[in-house]
Each structure stands twice: as structure tokens, then as C-alpha cells.
Image (cartoon, helix red, strand yellow):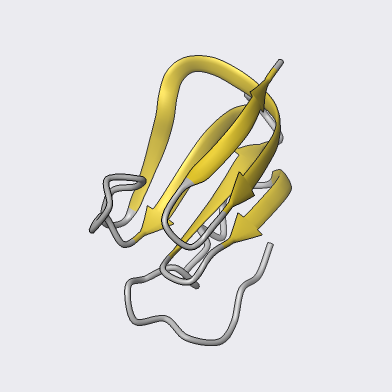
Length: 79
């Protein structure tokens, strides 16, 4: 996966060693569903509590089939 454009909060930096089945980007954060585990990871701005600086796993024991990032929130459909 690749992202480009504004990177003020690190939201455009995607780990080169991870494959994603889906990614979704908002104005300050980006999230993806890992191909190997179906876990959701997010990176970018934490101002509104939706992610952590750098890359973090969201709900470490929950698999997702879809994820959608908004300006100040993120939603996912559990597997």
C-alpha cells in the first residue's frame, strides 16, 4: 500500500512490510486491515482519540472486514 499527499501527522507513512486488504484515509489519520490477521491498524493524529502516533493495532483481538475513516472518527465492521 502507498499513500501520498499531506503527511503532517504521519498519516501518509505506510509500513513497507505489511500488506493490507483495505485502507481508508481521513484528514489526519489512516487505517488499514492487515491481510495476514484481519486486524485493524491506524496511524497519524491522536487529537480526537482515534489513533496513536505511529502505527497501532486497534482492538487487538478483533478482526474486521471493512474500515472507514472520517475526519474525526473511524468505523469498522467486525468479521
